[in-house]
Length: 184
Ligand code: IMP
Ligand code: MG
Figure 1: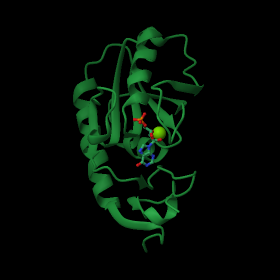
Figure 2 (figure 1 turned 90 degrees about the vertical axis):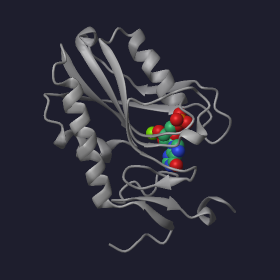
Figure 3 (figure 1 turned 30 degrees about the vertical axis):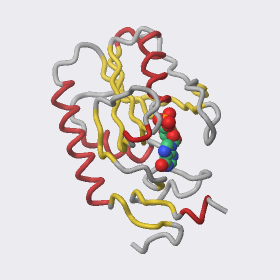
Figure 4 (figure 1 turned 180 degrees about the vertical axis):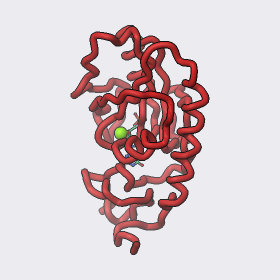
């Protein structure tokens, strides 16, 4: 497939993404094999939909799925560390649920740091996190995901669900966005 003209370079190609989701599914299977209660994969909309759909096909322990839609306040500026929840988990049985949050990318760490505390506060049996991409050099909140697909350098990436201004989500690979697209 030809590279999108706004993409500087492909960082993770389709074959590598396939290998990453296979490895992560294996780790999840191993760790949740004897889980008591329900196991729920929680897709964080919209960036995680492609990662979630590939990952859930490969996980063999019985799982349920759910979705949340969240957004950091002041995206693009200094983040306050607060997160706005647009779509919450609406489950009466949360005390029976082992939640595994499926996220596209951890940058400052604010979103998942907040979300883990929020869901534990709602009484979930357990809360863990799985991110496709991790930019550890950007962390402002001390947050370490439980499952990491790939560590990446501090570059703005798009594709495989990730967007810039809602564009590029449908690209089947993760690419670095050309600076000329967002720097005028
Ligand atoms: P955090 O709260 O700073 O960890 O922000 C995580 C969120 O920022 C992700 O879920 C993405 O929506 C967004 N984000 C951070 N880095 C990138 C990137 O390189 N490309 C696209 N979205 C990004
Ligand atoms: Mg996101």
